[in-house]
Image 1 (tube, each protein chain N blue to C red):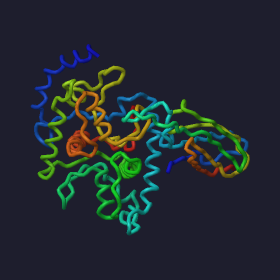
Image 2 (cartoon, rainbow over the protein chains, first blue to last red):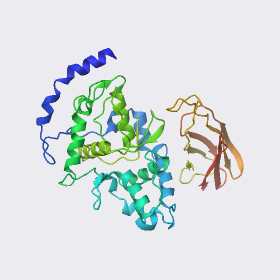
Image 3 (cartoon, rainbow over the protein chains, first blue to last red):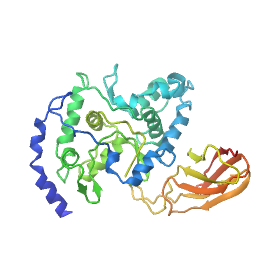
Image 4 (cartoon, chains in turn purple, cyan):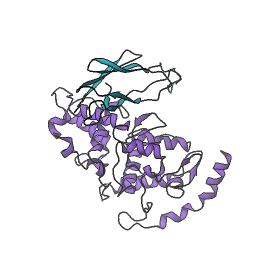
Length: 266
Length: 106
């Protein structure tokens, strides 16, 4: 562990140079790895085989459950997702590829999880699901499945610019006892080893995903919290504005990668 | 509510051996873990599962805490007649689940 900290200190002084890079399009002063490489390229062949076969992929169990929930009624009016949105294969196609998004009337930044919960409380008049609950994960997985293979594409405009920049700031700010920023690993050192794992570029195109480490299916925010824990920083709550900002930035950063939801990761 | 599913080839020839794949969504709690307040999480694994082929038992397994979450099993049987393959499982909490699939023999 001592040698690991030492290496990270050594890498630290290259960080200041990254801010001057300018991407071809999108916001200025933001950088992302070129070309983007999905996290699936950094995992073992066994895990990759897991994700590629829909039957053996444990993540698909959650999507299948989400398919049941899609038709299940909730709230006093006895409405299901299907009552309004009909066939998910049509209505939900591409949704996960363009989220998180600013909700028009309220101005709030919503990811797919938050969107589902908003639908539940405002349209179905039912109780919201807890953030990492099995039902919310299952529905998010099922909605995500409808965009599988489509390119990740969020638009950064005047409305979400402030949130994007806040996410970008979080990504490149050193935090925690380890004094590390996301960018120190996922921009500067991807492809190299951290203990026994190969550091990925930190893309979010497979989430929510099944993680072998968790033996469970989990949300992106759970995964992000694991990174905060890794650098010994204070953990933001799942679904908090802070993590939503980061999610927006990460979605922009993953642009061009195919949606793999529900994916499998180590 | 838990999901279980069975995968079979589209159709098989009579007398041929068939790979049956089974997956059950289950946390398979080992009984050794504690929650974030330090309280022991009760052991809860799929205790027993069996598969019936047209009503006859063709495969059964007793599982415990050594099996990973969301167990995935593969076994072979010899195709005799077209019919129903049914999976039943029960866990330590007494929760039961079932799944079925049709085997088409040509």
